[in-house]
Image (cartoon, rainbow, N blue to C red):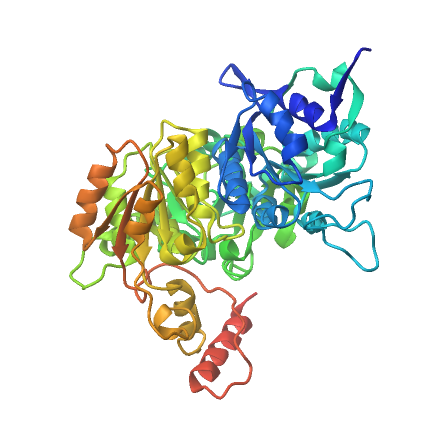
Length: 612
């Protein structure tokens, strides 16, 4: 076997460029590029290597390390985990800035390759600039922060360690069950050290999605449970989209008359117009989806983690006879809530369930009840999204305006605050992948950077980012990156002058308005933030509108714009969609001087008693 003498960084970059995937018959690079902010920990080694490969492996510069990792994660999600990106930072704060993004990828089971610079393996210059020193452990560096939020972590202290580390990294990144962030911490001196690498490391490799079929015994048990059900129900999670199983899901529901609710990650897995799509489920769910979920005696949970927002803190599936079948690639998720596990790929599993259930249909009354509930909810939702006469519009009314302007191919994106709840209940996704919500980690600041990643994954689709003023202020730098890269976004900023969602939660738990809205925070002068002027200073076409009619006009103009457009509108922080929804467990103080807190505690304890 021949060898090629390269630095470790050069070998890594060359190997990255040889990883491929096939999508719709076209062979494409698995890694669509590398996001990089250089510093002393990676500029001389990895920076030189990336420059040498710039014609075959693109490097993108961002303005914040967390943001560029968010963009890479959103790219992978929009690509349904079929393609991904790498992200590199320097040692120290550049690296730790990416830890939050690593957690986003970890929770959401999304692939991203993190390549932070690290200390000198030789330790000759210790302590090097930005090095974290542990008084009792000489092997610790800042990159140890990545360990709990990485599916695989390795620190390369010799150049030849790249060979097994890269193999393991690729296995994790492309495994549908283990998928998540991989961190290869690259000691900065080792990046520059040469080794005679085997040519096999640089051989082209095509990665195809693995689609495990269900175990025969598990399949038989699941089929028996479903056939015995009188009120079966499907919960569609993000795994449906990752598996590209939306066609199989729609066919399953139609063939067997089974209604379905969608999680935040699973929304758009079923066409909005599907007669058995009851919409959002859980804490931010529709009245239709939650009403049927409470009566269900069998829940087929497809590709979902069944986290507390989906299950109403384990109180939503309240029929005492309810059984759960967990169809999931990851056994850890498939067995949650004492479920009967069905460990398999969503597409393969749904197809086999449909065949095995031939001739089975849910009772006609149950199917009809679901369809009637869907019709009622659509009527209710339309009232919340319609324009009103109040001085400031609600978030729901802004959602309605964006919905009326949008086209079926558009992608709406959001992450945190009150907007995810309004969008989950009210948004009508036009096509699979048209709803992109980061609500696994609910990370403020993901929105604009995430929109950039979605646009990179599918430039033909209009990407609409809806973001509150709080998230905008946390991370807006990638507006400039979108302009620099010629990747147009439409960003709608809803300014309620604070953290309106948490203010409402604070009030609901008996707390006094405190430290959430700007007016309730310690201040000498309330800031008058001109978001439109700020966005324009970053290169966007920006406009502040005074009402919903002006918003309609601004959105209509924005579609023809060639670069990122930002539209700002003031909203009422107190208004939210009170129809639908479900209880969510938020602990209330057991003792308080506030009567409101005492009352809230009584309601909390009553809810706990009712929970199964």
